[in-house]
Length: 424
Image 1 (cartoon, rainbow, N blue to C red):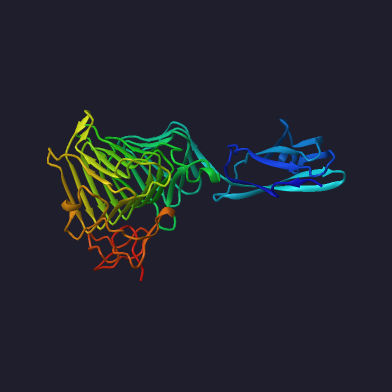
Image 2 (cartoon, helix red, strand yellow):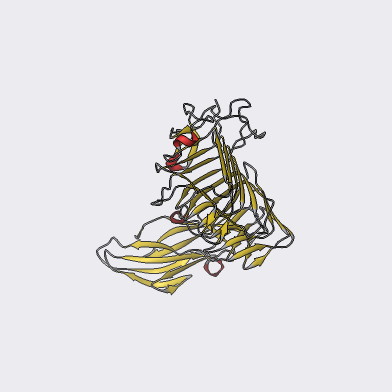
């Protein structure tokens, strides 16, 4: 009898028409003497979506394979799944069968197939809509032209390859819902890649891009989640509501002179900035939790930086308004404002801020400076404040914002600070 390191080889989501990663399976001969395996075959033979390789020889059938006593054999397995009519992921199964001295053994093969729409250097139509009926896989770029609108409906899953980005010169409207969030993420779904930063480029908004509104979305594992770039008097603008941005190689939101509004949103685990506004711009942060614990990085810059200057390329005033929000992180200093020589202004009220340099300046206005907001489990990205948190009921009703990140109702008179309301 042979001994296998696993009784099942499982592939994470495999997009149809695209081959999977290669899985390894070791087959051990625990006997002192060599054995000859009469047959190693994929049960479905040529009709199977699985391919097997032994010592460089391809299946689906290999005969007379010898394994020395106490030695092992390495099998390589891949999956390529054909498209179907299914909208949801579907299970594909087969097995590798081993015949040794009349003994029949098997290892199960399983993969989840997902039908997808594929995009390569694609320019969206002027009134295009992406639905959740299929996954959307971007190989290099998708561009939304100036004057055009791309709508992404609830539940849609967007996967991007290395260096791929969604570039918006017109308008992007993402209409997720609390139970059906739209997710922008990497293509690779294996365990080692699920929380690895820098696997794709990000969402980029050019100077002609205005009116962007993204609701109930998640952006993870990119270089920079949201990047805005102004030119002259052309100022891109974006509103992010109920948005979770995490595990960015560089920044969560990086704005070169753009206008950004955050409502009920969370940004965490970025290598450099959680939110940076360079070269001016308007920044409104309401009921949001920006808690940059940077679990995967050694970070030296503050998480929140605002400056009138962007090198020598752009100079403009910045306007920063923070209400009922948490600006937090592991460092003692998580905040930096550049000189306000062009009329820049800042207003921070009813918020928790981690800062040394601005502790005296931000005292008052019901702010809590360097007071731990007491998250439930920040290292695991759980930023629900506990009931005994000083942020509980420390906010003020504002701008008719009645729901939190999870669409829970906020207290109408004494809401909590941050993206997540405590439910007593």
